[in-house]
Length: 290
Image (cartoon, rainbow, N blue to C red; front, side, top):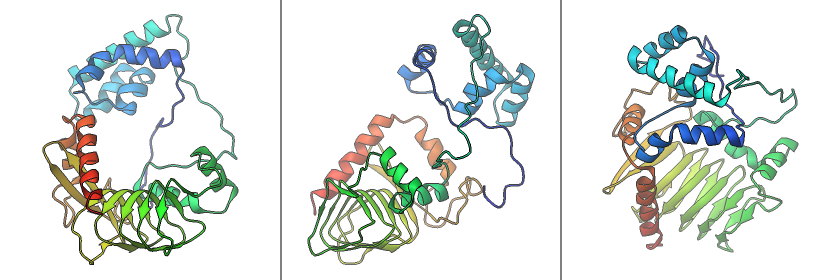
């Protein structure tokens, strides 16, 4: 838990759904899924309306900026859904005791995403279980082309990547990385295509396309994520592992075109498939230059 957190509330964040329940949810929200215009979250739109009283739910949603009419309509919709799915009043949600020795890998915050991504390189029973869960097996370098002259630490995890040389040091994870060379240690690179060398210690690059070329390296000492939108729009977002995204949600950090909230809102009306296609096209274009 972040050190600055002083108070916590009820939260259900991990769900195992039966096939029948999932099918019913898909039927209920088919109009939204077809239109791809709504934004529904598991907390305010799923478990809260089926576990809270109506007035309690309205009070919670009012604090989130939702009008009473809108919140009331959704509460009534979920009440009808519950009555239809469980007409006998059967329990809709229940807790599952996973014991005290179960492994838990949380990726819900930047710090945890970084730590648990790097954890796949560790030598422990839990790390081995995580690799098994991710189906990495015993091979930490799979479907990759790494130059013979490159220095690669035995513990580094490298998947579906093509690197022309350099050094991949300990505690490094490279997934879908294409670059002329790298010099990284303690770094996580996910979906990165760069026409220039990549160099860094302890950084994170996520969905990055860099076509600057030349010998000046693309640095990986902090955090960078590229956001692709239809129409050739790309926003380069920078952060750091020390930055609390929740606290800085509305703040436009130095070097960023928008705040995190601004990017979130700009993404809301967009088609995810179109954004993915734009990102894929950018990666393909950059790879052709290598």
